[in-house]
Length: 69
Picture 1 (cartoon, rainbow, N blue to C red):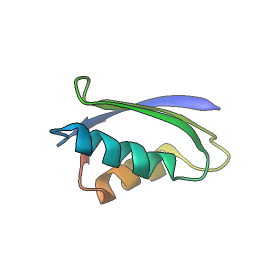
Picture 2 (picture 1 turned 90 degrees about the vertical axis):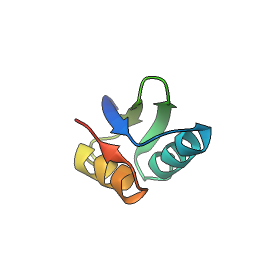
Picture 3 (picture 1 turned 135 degrees about the vertical axis):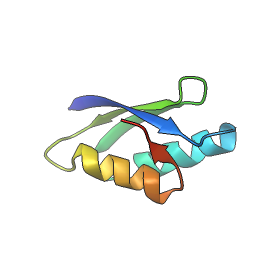
Picture 4 (picture 1 turned 60 degrees about the vertical axis):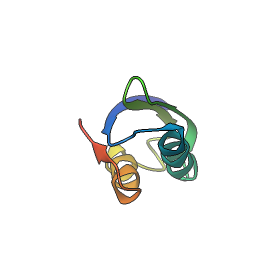
């Protein structure tokens, strides 16, 4: 497992946090996604053999948010 922190902009409420958490957690290979409204980020534990950082970023962007790093 590896860990990556993604900066996320566009989250304005706890509903946004739940949405980002859900889309990341549903990806095959993600074991944990901690999303912070205050920190404007997501810390994701994932299996690099199953998916890459680009796929994590794409999932966040497809949910309507912007990845800032």
